[in-house]
Image 1 (cartoon, rainbow, N blue to C red):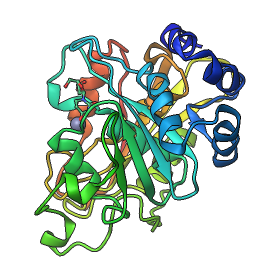
Image 2: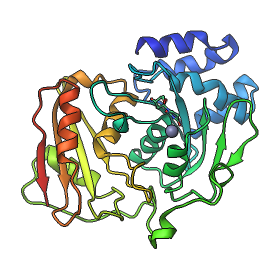
Image 3: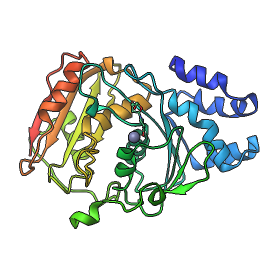
Length: 297
Ligand code: THU
Ligand code: ZN
């Protein structure tokens, strides 16, 4: 377990820590809390649903990688299944700030990559920025999802984003996380590239048509892969590249980026944009000395 998570656990009030510790200290803990675990924690701690989510925020924020701002943002997204997924911001030294990941994007893509088809709510330790409000407006559940901040009454996403711009304005029916997979295949793909194709098949890129996926392999013992699907946004700029989505999955699994041994990106030949150069430059900034494996299908 990383030191920040251990510190956040130690800083929890004892009446919460005693029940949450066995969950977080379990070697299979993956920065998620299942619906039955959450129900049980409510009974054990006597907290309300909202109080418990707020109490867990420091654990999510402890995953933050913020060498530039030193500002740790944590988010907890609750999927339609009732499971809770942690997220935290990521900043990259030596690349433009536009490559950063916000905590909300992290929690959302964490839930998405683990199979959720939408979100009930999101709990965040700071007010979501305009870019995150816009990112969330792309979701299958943008009309119904709730946003909870410390010391605020719960509000709907639409209350945080009045007169919103979104997919409908561009006549797009598909939504981020809507669970309608594509069916692309390639005979040329090795095992790593095949995982990248699986990610491409759940990616959301209705604006550029440049569906894409990333698979990361680690140099640790056994086969260990992390995948990311590209998440495009109607307002274009808040789009989240597949590499960032895959790195979020590593971060939430407690894996260090220095353990990456190979990265594969797959995109569609028919797409109108490419992430190849940007992906390579972020990998270079991480000082990984890795040449991106690339396939256009
Ligand atoms: N940040 C978030 O994670 N979410 C927000 O909505 C506000 C800003 C992060 C981005 C960056 O890593 C740091 O906070 C400073 O802006
Ligand atoms: Zn934001």
